[in-house]
Image 1 (cartoon, rainbow, N blue to C red):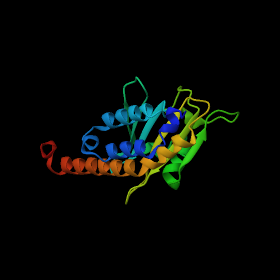
Image 2 (tube, rainbow, N blue to C red; image 1 turned 45 degrees about the vertical axis):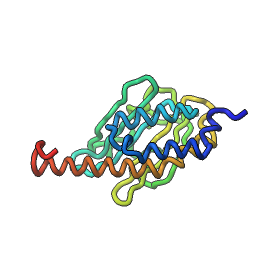
Image 3 (tube, rainbow, N blue to C red; image 1 turned 90 degrees about the vertical axis):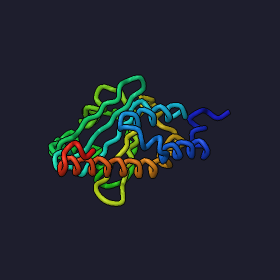
Image 4 (tube, one colour; image 1 turned 120 degrees about the vertical axis):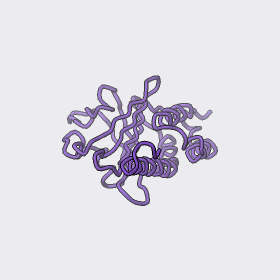
Length: 198
């Protein structure tokens, strides 16, 4: 009998998740609602996601990006990142930075004898995460964003889990690109016409 994690690779189940990601219901959610619902849905499919983080690049003169982080039974964290992050040793050279710069997926195991300073990034610190799957979200133009799926399970993610993550990535990319463009438009309108323009 197949496990729930194996069932998650069934095309119909993955298709339901993709359909939700491109639905109006999903587009209408705020950042916290989006990541909370996505994390809950992934867990319901049997993926052992203990930390889910979206790292969205922005087109803003003062804000480099926004990190939105979810974990089961915890409030969602939203952190705006200034351009100072580009000089922070903890970020520059980290697997997350490399995924965003190279636009290549990565699977990273935590632990081992070599210190991994990037595990001290605020949304990962003190969480005993064993494996990270980082997927770039590359839009039609502009810088790449990324999503990170992390688990405490020493076994890490199964091949079927990875298949689900990779299959939903294009829908996530489009959704995040639209959200970033919407935020950019609102910021421009606010700058030009004031808060009344919203």
